[in-house]
Image 1 (cartoon, chains in turn cyan, purple):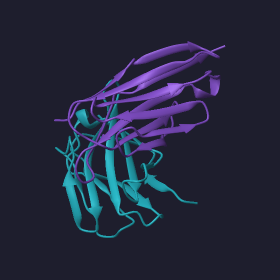
Image 2 (cartoon, helix red, strand yellow):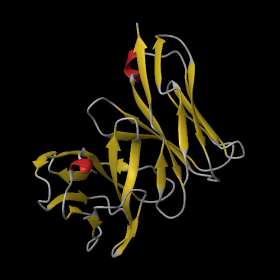
Image 3 (tube, chains in turn blue, red):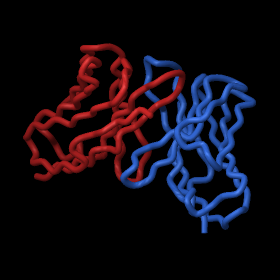
Image 4 (cartoon, helix red, strand yellow):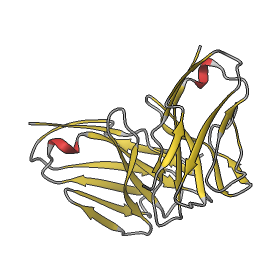
Length: 112
Length: 110
């Protein structure tokens, strides 16, 4: 089944403890993105990647890192999480402009 | 910064009625996408509009794009309960940059 897989689905962590949210897609898509969803703000793009080793900042990149060493994987790294990063995170991939994103199931992160 | 505004933010409509959701954006773009999100779920791609005047239809939903007016509409015809969800438009800028609207929460009541 074509899908974007994120892990974990739920995560509670403490301020300052490094964490990684994994994202993997099995559709050979070139484009991948990370979004955060907050009430009243819609989805905001954190980072995106247009191919292996090609990444760029989205609208709200502060406090996040990404890497794209392989086409299928696009992990999101929070080096020192803070409470304002408590949010619902989505990874998404697409093959090109003719298609919309395929989204992962989401990761609900709480930083205390 | 590209701004995307959706109207209305909340919409409660009776089954069988028609309604339109509007998506306005602030800078030039010729690619617009519509998504649906059910409560507690992920987003699902509905429509991809790639040029001025583009119109796409699927069941009771029809989306259109007017790039000159910087406006996209999502029209709902004869609403049914299954259409209750939050609908997002997203505008493509350069490369892989996207800007989402804040969403329209639609509730269809019997």
